[in-house]
Amino acid sequence: MAFARQEAPHSWLQSQLPSSNYIVLQGRGRSHSQGSLKRAYPSNQNLTPTQKIWQCWHFKLGHITYSHIQKLALGGFLDRVSMGLLRTKIAGHPKCSACQFGKQTRLPDETTTTIKREGHLGSLKEGQLKPGDRVFCDQLESRVRGRLLHTAGRKLDKDRFCGATIFVDAASGYIHVEFQVTLNATDSINALDSFERSSLHMGVAVNSYYTDNGIFKSKRFVHEIMKNSQSIRYSGVGSKWQNGVSEEPSPSLRLMPAPL
Image 1 (cartoon, helix red, strand yellow):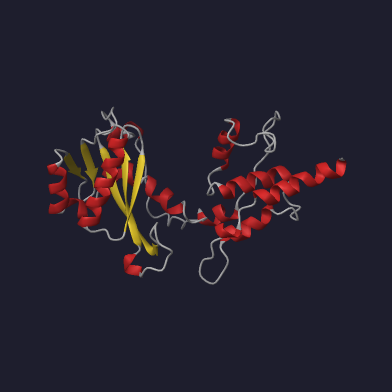
Image 2 (cartoon, helix red, strand yellow):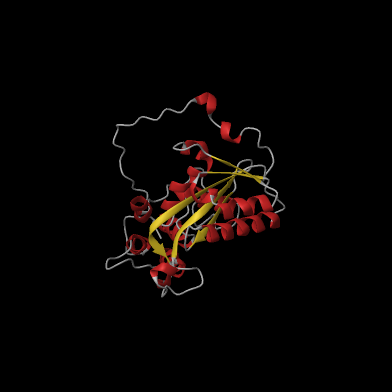
């Protein structure tokens, strides 16, 4: 019986390991996810069986944070016993090398100092008490184009995603992302319509928008806003901090796909 108890976690771990379909190869080298996957194999003596289970769920759930995995386990959605969450002291979770590489950023040059004024924090959201009262918009662009959600990746580069439009609700903090093949007015209006359909499905009607300049100031985009009896405001020239509510999630959204 002792031998069976020792081998049971390993056999369970083998069944819980992500299949090879989830291993993504990038370029000519191995991805960080493939290297991290080997850490969860039973032959790895650096991690305890409990830590390997945490690592497996971390891979299966798309590299979400370990604190999120812990909430799912404590809520009864995952096996609390196998994850060691019935003890008085919660077992320490391992570190994911793919996430550590993906979170790396360039160090600041220390030539510019930014000081946040405590009295002005949250002023952009002041007075926006109901979802839809004000939605902040921004666009991000990726030099590496991504494949469409319904294709196998054989599209030409010009037909792949080049960026996205981010919508952030001021009252609830809800973040909605719409991927785009181009960042022109047509695709931006399509992203706007998709966001508003999603909002109406959740019972929220958008009243106003707050954006940067650029494509949001084009005649076609402004005409679409006015046609829906909505209002729009713009940040000042060179004052992106005025649209900081939508600027803040951009680094996180860029870093999330890196481990995958």
